[in-house]
Image (cartoon, rainbow, N blue to C red; front, side):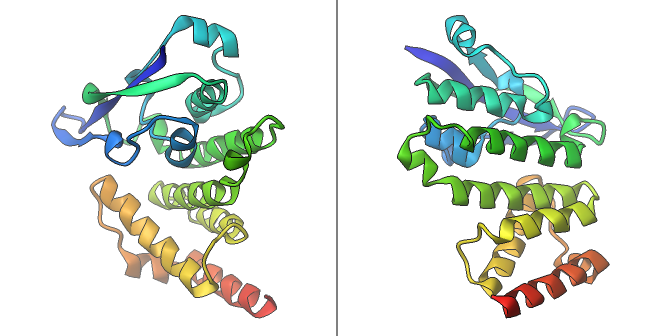
Length: 219
């Protein structure tokens, strides 16, 4: 009955040397709609295998969604009841370097959040999925912010952190702490160490902290 088989992938450098084997089943053991939505565990389309009749049912890829067309596709499939499971091994190598599309931070951030806009606008979502919206949007916006920082788009990083503010489950100070903790974790996942001092000294981060203070006073 499976409509999707998903697998891990091996990140390699430009010389083909292993950086890390990605094993997303460790944190998303069950590939149901909630798992796809919360974690979006897709590194590259090459790790996904689809049953043709399921693709024919949902219409395959939707144009105009940029780098997030794969996320949109699996969400549409899962919403229709398409079952998925893991092949718990790396099936492809993904070369990590500056020219990869995954380094296009602005496009990536716009695409993934645009997919969420489209998804949550649906009137056919189960109640339990509707209740996840704030958490999913917050986590996705914070990840997008980190990715924008990682790819050098500091002003856009601030914009997306500000957008995450209204979805935060934390108090103001806790939200800022969570931003830093999240940035640290995301950086470690790609083999980097977050330089928190460098981040804190940027004019964009200083402006963001002023914005946080002003919004805290208003609230």
